[in-house]
Length: 477
Image 1 (cartoon, rainbow, N blue to C red):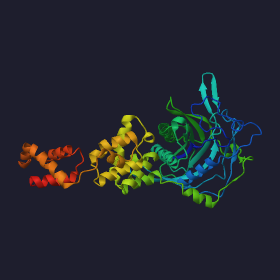
Image 2 (cartoon, rainbow, N blue to C red):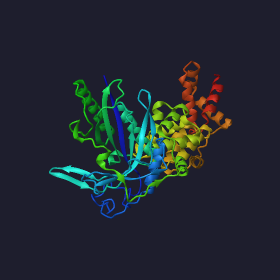
Image 3 (cartoon, rainbow, N blue to C red):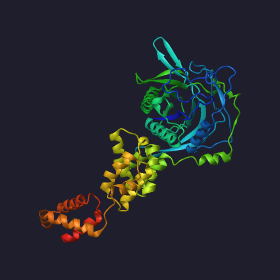
Image 4 (cartoon, rainbow, N blue to C red):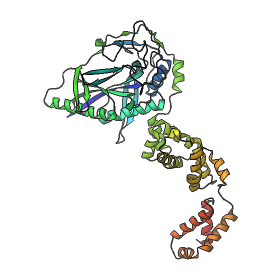
């Protein structure tokens, strides 16, 4: 038997207005090739880079969310390699003194098992351009060159493709929760390198590895790792294990990896300190301020929704998946003080309407505070649940108005006057003698019909609890 040993490098674009070391726009999506460039990001001689302060801040906050240590001194280095889409002939990255180190992320697998994945470091660097291979050659677009990246490097703590995907998805969630990256893989904002080795079960030694480069989806990450595990296992079974580290590419059309080159090590890149950028000094006081910007993270939210709010596993997963929904739901709960009803109104009523209208939560006029107030009106017996989910919510969705204002305008406040309710009950009983007799003969669902008729006569405004009590008293039940 053999086991896989896997480490990941996750590259994510940082959400900033400008590139890492120049003032070019950081949004190149859909732009004409080679139009979003300047002498700095094109690596012209004599050009001086300047560190993007916002990229540094978002990198540090993300590192803190990954439980990393933040050293007081960090620096940028030149990573030298020659490739067509790297205009300067080197990448500005961080080698031996990155902005963070020694972190971890906890994940939960499908069977409920929790795993602790160590983070070696999160460091900053600038991106290369983009190559498009066509018949007879390759085209280069430098629009992306110089975009700010964070690279998250793990220890070899992952032992299956499924674990790798769960971890990668958790990193994507954390980046979005923190607001440091959209991590949209369809726009090339997040990609993975996976280092895969295999060894006999129970052996603790690390053997030769294959680094799979530039995987751009969770599916390709899982499929490529599984392929490489199977390939290396077959070599072990033939008593011909890999000798020496290699770099491979994933050929999606063939569903297999292909050898690119022997694996480079740090000496091949000839690192040296970037002479045009001063070292970064990060004080403990600055770190303390940044720690306050780290929000409640996905796994913490998920556990809270399960254990404190008593949501079902599927509800907890849904409401913690995306930060926008999680924050909205949290606000609804804070205002309404009713997690179960918040889940029902948001998950069923609001999300159902948004789906029907083909709108996103961002486009919704109903604020979280107003939805929380609507639930509170129900809990305080000021309007019925049916009216809240029906007429009042429809008006809120259309106008974005405060539910209290809508209830007042439309005269929908719940009737709690016992005299008025008694008069309605007497009216319904008098006009439904057959149903009353059926109930007295043992037809229990007749009672529900009578309740419905009273509510209908009151246009949904009668207090349901009072209606029930009044009917029971009148029917002698």
